[in-house]
Amino acid sequence: MPPKKDPDALPGVKLLRLFRKLMVEGRRHFQTDLAKELDCSPQTIIRMIGEIESVVGLSLVSGTENRRRWYKIDTISRSRLGLQYEELRYLSICRDMAAGTLPEQVRKRVDETIFNLSVLMADKDFAVRENVQKTQFLFFSKGSIDYTPHFETIDKLIAAAEQKRVCVVKYKASGANQSREHKFAPGKIISLNNALYILGAILTPNCVKVRHYLNFAVHRIVDVTLTDVTFDVVLPTYEENSFGLPWHEPKVFRIKFTPGKASDYVRERIWSDRQKFREQSDGGVILEMTARSEPEIMSWVRSFGSEAALLSVEPLPQKGGANRREPKN
Image (cartoon, rainbow, N blue to C red):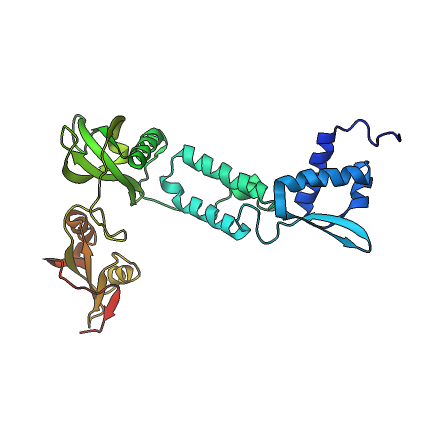
C-alpha cells in the first residue's frame, strides 16, 4: 500500500481547507489540481466532495473540461438559504433605519445575524465586520430615548402579546409621583417620534372584560409581570399611517399654513393616509387630514406659531379622499 500523502494533516483539516477554497474563491477547481494542492489522492478529493455536497446540496456543481473533472460552489445569484446578496444589504439598511429605537442587545443580535448570513452565503466582500457594521444612514434627533435598559420590558411585552397573556404592568405616568398597577392585555408595539408605545387594553380586576384601550410609553413602565391568565384582546381598527397615537374616534382636521417655509414643509410630507391639500391663491395651503390624536395635533399646530392655524375639527364623513391635491381657489 502506498504511503499517505501529507500524513501529518488530519482528514478534518483537509476537508475544511477544501471547503474554504471552494466557498471563498467561487470558481472552478480541477480535481487533479486540488489533489496536488492538498497533497492527497484524487480518490480522497472525491470522498471529501461527497461530504461537502451532503451539506451544501445543489450549491455544489461539477463538470468536465478536456476530460478533467472540476468542482465549484455556486453562490453568485442565490444562496442555498434562499437569499440574494442585495436582500442582505436591504436588511442592513433596515437595521440602520431602526437603530434609533432598538435596544443595544437587539442591535448586536441583528449585527451578528446579518454577519452570519453573509458568511453562509459566501459573500466575501460583505462578510467583513467593518463592512457589515458600517452604517449607510445617519439619523439626528432632538432628544432620543435609550431603550437598552428597557430591553427586558420589551421582551416580556412581545411574549405576552404572542401568547395572549395578561400582564400586571406597573406604570408611572408623566407628572405622577408614584406608579400604579394595571391588568393589561398587550396588543402591538408602535413607534412614534423615536419613542416606543405598547397599544393594548386595560382589563377589569377579574380579567374578563376590557375597561378601555390605551397606550403605555414603554420607557415609563416600571415593571411587567406575566400572569398565567390568557385574554385574546381584539384591538380596534387603526390606520397605521395616521397622525399621532390613537386616542379617540377619527376626526377631520383642517389646518391653514401661510406661504413660505411652513407650507413648503407641510406639502413635502405625508401626515395621514387620508389627507388632502387645498392650495391657496396667496401661496399658502390648507391641509385636511383624518386623525385620532387631537391633543398631538393641537400641540403640532402651536409649534408653527403664527404660520399655522386650526380652522375646524369635524366628525369623519362617510366618504373621503386620500392624498389628492385640489385646485387653487
